[in-house]
Image (cartoon, rainbow, N blue to C red; front, side, top):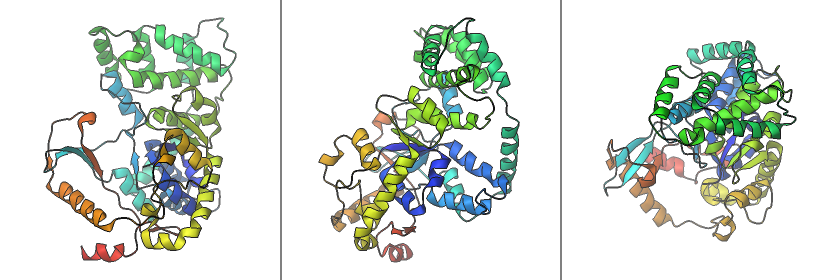
Length: 417
């Protein structure tokens, strides 16, 4: 698996299908629910600005969306609520998935099993231009609500936390002010702000306040780390708006901003969006990377050309097994990202172009089938650091664009099993 990456809809739209193959091959995609919402929201447009029917545009986007090694992240509002009531939200670059079933395998090892998510199944339908009626209604309501969205209410709240006469002349000063404000302000006010700005149920304010009063927390960041992270972004953005550094006339900024709430769950954030490029650097960890979408697209295009010299081998073996990591003799944005996230990857032996041990592959497949078939569901709630393995179900296409993804002859194997 490659670096965990978060992307927005505009970046994926910019790729060709062939370029998207290498995006899927060399990155582990954290697909935020905002991506699905934005994609589905376009359904009400009827016709795309390119002149194509919107259903065809969404179908093409669904084709480019990664499936293998990709997963939808739990919605940020649920994670904020969990953080406020004391559920640990891990913020170390890993995707937080929903719907896993804990099982014990025949050897007594605990595993988490994930089936295809509703979002993944929806993408398959959208690829075939098949939409549920409720999705069409959602698209209409989503666009209507976005067109009616204003920032007046939240700006009215936020302006009261900035003392009169405070000089905030640039975004860096605003970021420093927000950090100090969250570190020194009473929890009652911070809980009120996160509840109002994030649109959370009001009863969570009282539940969270009880938790604060019944424990000895040093500050809000220790009390609810993820909720504090989201509040930092919200306050930063709205104070920037108050001071004229961000526009009040762009309702879509609210959706764009929400992508940043998922930064704790990736290594890499790629975007073509100007707002993301301005705001994201203030909230990245030291081990994270912000990548310009155009630069990554160029790197993927170079890979698309590079691997043409191995087209016959890839047709036989499939790209999935032929290239487990980027080629070491091609320096571009993809290898640059791998260098920063996995500094030692070049020291490991790549299997690019190397024949796999078919006997070992067969034994591994038989073992995995046994584990999947004979594992028994349990309700232990085992901590993740004690989980032995994770199994996911994905339906990988045999071909995507001009590239063969799976080994030649696998169609016959699927037919006979």
